[in-house]
Length: 352
Ligand SMILES: Nc1nc2c(ncn2[C@@H]2O[C@H](COP(=O)(O)OP(=O)(O)O)[C@@H](O)[C@H]2O)c(=O)[nH]1
Ligand SMILES: [Mg+2]
Image (cartoon, rainbow, N blue to C red; front, side, top):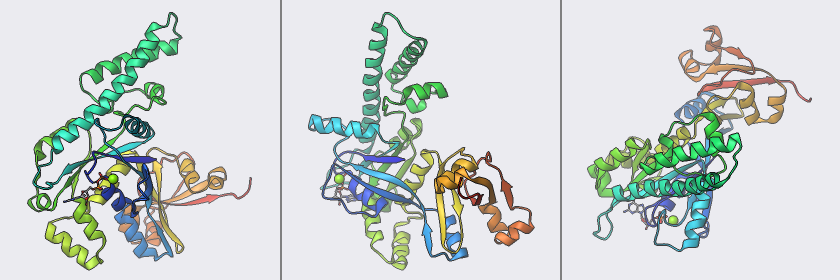
């Protein structure tokens, strides 16, 4: 799963990228790649309980896609950027919300502009496909279905809708893979405020930005990357104090990571022990056997049973022993649908 950060130059993409991945900018490459830790309080609690040698959080791959999300730039760079965006599973769109050298930001304009650009790019893609299919004298049943679908999408896009908002059957969704359509991808909108905006709790066009995001089904995170970068440098004690001064309850970067994780349709199951406490990302709806494959293909192949305790039960029952006594210790089979927060221990046969 890959997430690309897009936005106008100077909006704060690289600052956010560094915060998410804890990585410096690698010599201004076109796309810097890193892994973002997905914070999870439950993992912190399990780490306290098991005191393992190692704690591993779920991670998502993040790319800092340099370049503007729109016009005025070198054409080739723009094409490369769009091609990069097509291969992403989700996008984070950073818009500038801080005043700089006396000039006001335009977060609403920037946000709507980016939304429109993605829709326009998809219209171009759909248009080419419709023209090509319509010009064919004969069409297979599959081509007929595709022509119908693309025509329908073109109509929706023409009304300014993003494809995220269009209901699609599984068949139609499958038909669209390979086109690299953009407006169908989950997008997390990220308004990068300045210090003043953070302190006042408001920024230019805030109401309109919020309205835009909710009408397009985009999660919105409002943060101040500058202040969070400062916070990242501090010791825990000082950091908490600074957060209080700014009235920040939860780090914005953490919120971005959580929103990305959610919009990718990922959930976490946990493995625990003295050696390691770990969160494993799996697609929502995965079976116990599929989830086992995330750990190792041998565990999937030799799957016997998954010993499972829900995290909430583990807490309420005061640990594993308590969960057993309370009857919350379950032996699940291969087709069990894994739930977010399941603590799992796989029984499997070695070597086959
Ligand atoms: N005042 C203020 N400046 C910021 C903030 N975030 C980033 N900047 C500054 O804006 C400039 C551009 O940031 P950068 O992350 O490189 O933007 P990019 O071009 O989108 O990658 C840098 O000089 C940052 O220090 C912020 O929250 N507040
Ligand atoms: Mg940059």
